[in-house]
Length: 220
Image (cartoon, rainbow, N blue to C red; front, side):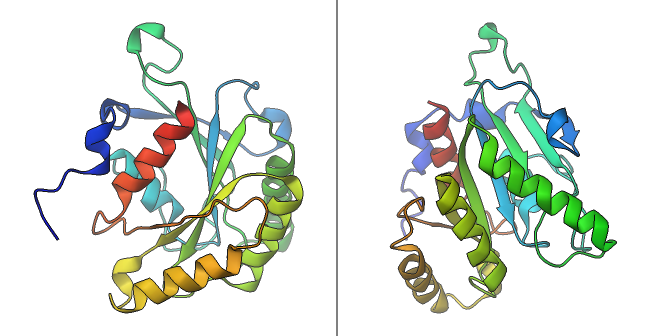
């Protein structure tokens, strides 16, 4: 690979991601959602798939999104926006990133798990400003049954989603192309699925520029 090759982001404005981002609010129920407005891009996935780590790496801010080794740590819809959001002088695209509660296994009481799972599904079904869901899939495990249930929900709700493989540094490099091909084959006939996926590693900075470009295209 040519180390001098331009990054995909050399074709767009990097300032969007160099600007400090801030946590706006946690939403424990739909009635606390911010007013409808600028585009929202959500990050979804099984508990402990690495959503918070990916958001921190994407924005270059350690500790912005809370990370934990305990599945189910994120229990609200957490909103993040660039500092200067809404200020025309800042010259930044108005957009919000949403870190969603993980689905599947979580070390929490069942009633709490059920409550935030319902919050996730209700949000996905009924938020017009939601432009795309980046559905994170752990490269070590691939698509699981509860992932497929979420894909079914997104298809029924006609919510655009794109698969993002996480932790690709944790599997052998020769296995990555097959995983990509198998995953694309599994979503090929799904009506709301974006036809390409992004393979990433938060630790090794793999694929993050590709994800940044996708986000900026949605912001535009």
